[in-house]
Length: 179
Image 1 (cartoon, rainbow, N blue to C red):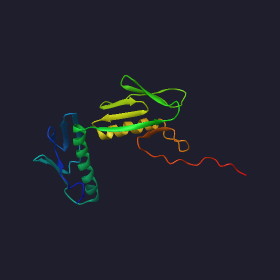
Image 2 (cartoon, helix red, strand yellow; image 1 turned 120 degrees about the vertical axis):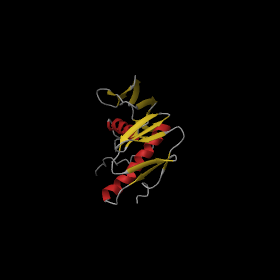
Image 3 (cartoon, helix red, strand yellow; image 1 turned 45 degrees about the horizontal axis):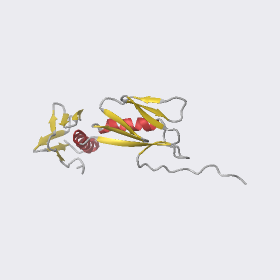
Image 4 (tube, rainbow, N blue to C red; image 1 turned 90 degrees about the vertical axis):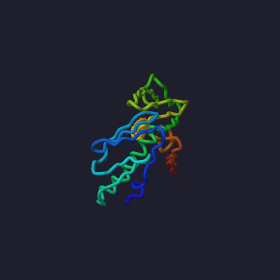
C-alpha cells in the first residue's frame, strides 16, 4: 500500500467533510468551502473525525492515485482551516509592484507596466518588494504565484527578477576577458 495513502486524515473541529455521489468531496471550514471530484473507483470514508482513502486493487494507476487523493483531501482540509500563502520577492533596480484595487501592477523593466487580476478565491498583497499570494486552494495559490514569477524570471547572471522568497539563484559567471 501507499505509505501516504493509507494514513488517515484527522478532521479538526469546525471542519465538515462530506463525500457525495461519485466521490464528490466537499470540505467546509472557517475560511470557506472547497469541492473536488475524485476517481469514483476509490473508496473515501468519513468516520470518527477521520477520512480514510482505500483502493480496490493494486494496479499501478490505483497505487499512483491513492496517495495523490489522500494528499489532495489533506490539502483541502488545511486550506479551509489555515489557508495557504506563497511569498514572492522582487529583486532589481526599478522593479516594483503596486496594488490597483484587487489587481496588481508590476513594473519589471519592460516598456509597459503589467496588470494582473487574480482569479476568484486568491488574494494578493504587496509589502515593499514582497508579494504575498494567499487563498484556501493550494493549487490556485501556487498557479497564481507561478504566473506572477513568469512575468520576469530571475536572471541567471545578475539575479534580477521575481523569485520565491528563500529561493536561491545560482549565478553564472559573466564573460571572461581574453588575452
